[in-house]
Image 1 (cartoon, rainbow, N blue to C red):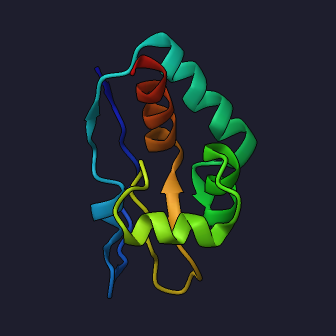
Image 2: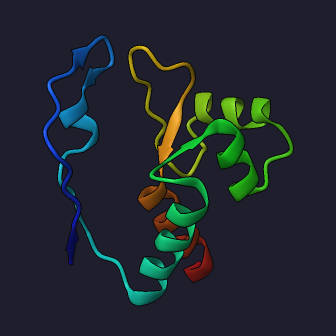
Length: 104
């Protein structure tokens, strides 16, 4: 089991707190999932923009990602931050969803 932890931030805004986003969540990851997460982090960083999510999941357009998000069919959660435009996905969640796709 891997626990994800990040430093505390003192931001509280309209979309919740940074602690809500960076809350330690137990995630069971096998070695291939860890490697996938590392590769995604190396290429995109800890947060992926909608354009990068579209690239990883091979959606044709960003509008298709937005529509999948609104229909709740996007395989990862998207987050918003005050002062930052757009939605973002966590690299670890993207890696886990990709690994789950390989298993099914």
